[in-house]
Image (cartoon, rainbow, N blue to C red):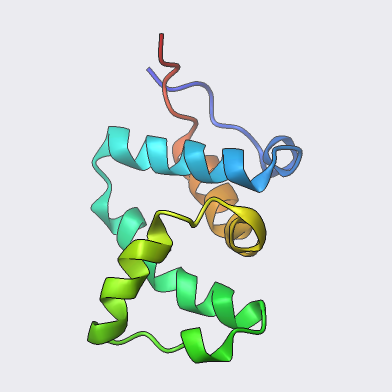
Length: 100
């Protein structure tokens, strides 16, 4: 069972990597393909916000490289740029269940 739904202030104290890991874990628990798709679609905008304009276009061919970027969406500046997405998801759906 997932923990109580956190508020944004609690989540703001967490590192972006932890937010990513928790949001993705919660989406996996819920089998929430919609969130994972939303994350993939948010990566180009996050890249553009980081000044990487050449990565800002989403198209079918770009999708393959997005899958690679998806594996790194919890690291460094990209994780920070995606922080609002992770925070919003966790405040709406709660934290993932603790793993033993």
